[in-house]
Image 1: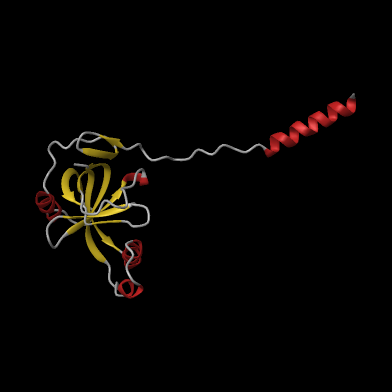
Image 2 (image 1 turned 30 degrees about the horizontal axis):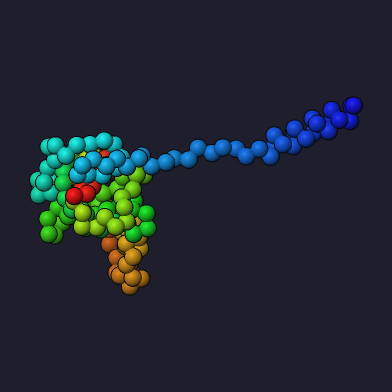
Amino acid sequence: MKNILKFSFVFLLILGACKQEKKEVKTEKSIKITENYASFGDKISEEKAMTSEEMLAKFSSLKTGDTINVKFASSIKEVCSKKGCWMKLPLNKDTETMVRFKDYGFFMPLDADGKEVIVAGKAFVKETSVKELQHYAEDAGKSKEEIAKITEPKTEFAFEANGVLLKTK
């Protein structure tokens, strides 16, 4: 009887030690689709969104390190081809903003190039290092020769979106 109890205790001890620990996995916020938009991240509305030209004027008044909370509309020029973890939005024919997503909490569809979006979040001016610029070029699928041509940092208009509406119709 003692042997059975010992065996049972050892078995339970081994079983408990082998028990797989449940890991909490951060999941993307669910994508909600309204009549005209797919929503990513925080819930935002299309109301009172600035045009990309108005956003360019706001960016132009900022210095490196300044931030403002805004909402504006544009069309997607480029999306990260690996995960959809960033996108570039044109502000006019010569200027664009790099958009990343707050806490990597959501990503854009990889096939979203050319689609209209409304983004809400924090706009700021920053200096982007050569290493980071080369990383983005690699993510975008640029050739090694194109990546090697990136040799100087760049002052950029940046945006951290907490919510995005992607036009579906």
